[in-house]
Structures are given as structure tokens and as C-alpha cells.
Amino acid sequence: MKLDLCSLKSVVDFVKEFKSKESCLDILINNAGLSMKPRTITEDGFEQVWQANYLGHFLLTVLLLDILKQSAPSRIVNVSSAAHGYTKKIQFEDINGERKYDHVEIYGQSKLAQILFTNKLAKILVGTGVSAFSVHPGGVKTNLGNSELPRFSKAGMILAVGVSLVNCMGLTAEQGAQTTIYCAVTEGLEAQSGKYFYDCKEQEPKPWAKNDEIGEKLWEFSNEQIKSFV
Image (cartoon, rainbow, N blue to C red; front, side):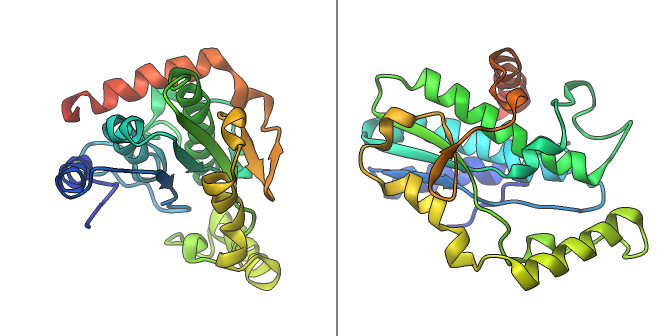
């Protein structure tokens, strides 16, 4: 079924179609992502990396919570990244990068949001039979690093070096998927709901990724951004 995270209408249409065809949802894996793109605003008025990596997943998850609860025990796995350490805060006052657009920080912000979102989900889903996890897949040889940035720009040159290293030394897509699969299907993992995993083990994210106050603010902020679609 068609789903374009850079169109919130597409997310809504997808959920309607899914619910018309399916009565059960055991596992939701939010895995799509963009990196190192020129600043672009989506049809919904949001910066595209923020919407593709986080906000589209947020809306999708919120709209599917009812069927996830009906299907319990069920799980949500949010694919974050160690890149959440690239920035220590969510730029609530400049979420579209109008005043400052740093490609590395913009990507890191979206991945930080995924962890904060996971933490909040785990809290509100206590007792429902739905558990939530965030994961870092590792450095994986996919096309995520395919950049539209000029190679002669600072960010473009840094990315070119990084992509070359990952292509030489990185994980295959199959290897990179293992932590996501682990969180999706490992029996007895429900007690670790809300935790962050890497290499099929629980890991500690950066301290600011565990800030409940920021997580609560992000939850309210995100709900405000999608209010026209729920």
C-alpha cells in the first residue's frame, strides 16, 4: 500500500486503507529516513527531514494505536540512530530550520525525537499490552547517505568521506536489520519497553534523550503539528 511520509494526507489515507483490509497489527516498525538533503518544505509546511524521519511516523503511530491495542501483545519499533547525539535539543522555535539549517544537526534532531517519542509511548501504553523500543542499527551500507548536497560544500565533503567509510566497512542491510528484528520478535522483551537498543542489547542513549520534560513538550508539540489530520 502506498505511504508517503512527506504527505500527512498520504499517511491518513494509508491508515484508512489498512484498517479497511486488516483487523490486526502485531508489529509496527518505523524505519524510513532521509539524510543530508537541501532544506525543503513539504506540502504540509514542514521541513522534509523532520517530517520524513519523525513527524510522519508520529502521525502514523498515533493513528494505528487503536488497532495495536486491539492486537496486543504488540510492539512498536522506532529506528533511531547514534546520530541522536549530534544535537542536545529539539529546536522547537525553529523546527523548519528557517534561522539555521545545519544538515548534521537537523538529522540528529529527528533521531533524538524518535527516542523521546519512544520513551513517551512506553509510559502511556503501560497496561495495554503494547510495548515500544528505539534502536540504533549501526553503520549500514544503504542509500541513506546518497546526498543532494554539492560535493564541494563542507557538509558534502564530510558526507562523501563518511559514505566511503561505511561502504567499505559498514554492515549489510541484513546485518543492520538484526537489532530491529530483535526488538520486534524477542520473547519476554516487554519489560524493557521504552529502552534503546544497539547490537541486540540494551544501551544507554545520551542523557538528554532521557529528559522527560523535553519528551512531554515534544509530545504536545507534535500533536499540535498533526492536529488537522487526527
